[in-house]
Amino acid sequence: MKIKGFLEDISGIRRITKARLDAIKNAPADPIPEDPIRKTAEELHPGPLDLVVTSVVPAGKDVKTFRFAKPDGAPLPPFRSGQYLVLTLEIDGKLISRPYSISSGPQEARKENGFVEITVKKPRKDGFFADRILESLKEGDPANVLIGVGEFCYEPLRDADHILALAGGIGITPFLSMAKEIAAGKTKPSITILYGADQKEDLILFDTLQELEKAAPDRIRVVPVLRNAGEETDGDSFEHGLLSAELIGRYLKGKGDTSLFICGPQPMYRYLKSELLKLSLPARRIRFEVFGSVKNISAYEGYPKEAAGRTFSMTVQRGIREDVIPASASESIASALERAGIRLETACRSGECGFCRTKVLSGSYFVCPENDGRRAADKDFNYVHACSAFPLSDLKIRIPIA
Image (cartoon, rainbow, N blue to C red; front, side, top):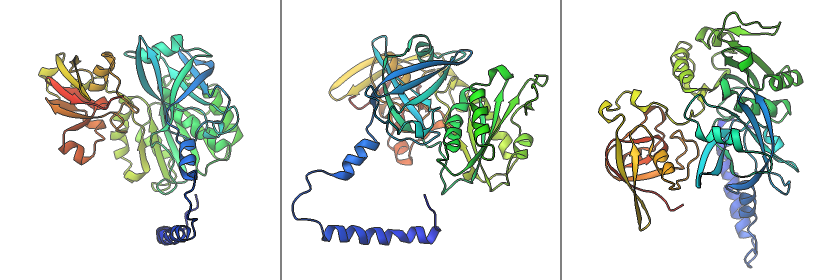
């Protein structure tokens, strides 16, 4: 994208309008049998695809990289580095979906025999979907995949030419995709990755990151940050401690010349939000990736403690059909539907994207304040994102027919 300047770019709408009017004026009288714009849109944004697992490669302790491709080897639709895909599998007779950051580069999808990859780590707890795919998903298995979701991407109109990436654990995956695109010469910015881990053995895909750094040393830098101060570094360039404001400040290229991209576990986000306040950075320069389902909703301010541990009744309307299912106050509405085998389309599982937008007809609920991505009108008219709303009483909801 070539940016000429604010006024010149905005005034470009006049040229577009004139070109459109000229095209209408000179169009043939007979209807066009095929709409090229629709055809292009369907090729670039085809919706969920039926793909196949073409490889499963260990990437560390309890970590695997899964590669997906079309059965005929055709190119995949485009995505932007930093985006995620939504993987849907049938588990115990139910269709379950989860988002995973894409760890392959965009250029690897758009060629013949193109592919897309995710890297999955076994969660410490409450990870039945990840556990299942790590144990059971194998080469040759089918998978339904929606590619290219999310806004955790470099945007030249907003971001600086230098990205400072703060990664924790499996949160390295979107930055691996960015580094691959940069190393391939397909995007403009440079990137410095501060990669936090307890010890060197916990650095996922570190060898791959080092290879990318060697391929483009002037544009890619990877700096592990190990929490264990006595960790042996073997002569490599390591930092020690936490991703503190003092450490981050040493890698900034001026407060306005660096964009911070942050991806990792929820505790890391809470810590960094307080640390980054010390740096007084422009808000537009800080990007947090969505962090998935809330694990302990009762710990949030404003959550009524008397609701914790209770189970309510939830009536679910789909067209003319009604089902009554149990709904735990400690789980989101989306999770309750999932357990009952009722299909609701989800993507981010973090309250941001709106895929699971649901109308609450009656009853009380609590929306996690950290990931309430609803529009103001939705709040006024009692809509929620089901992945970030938790029942506080018996509920009645209406969802689309899937």
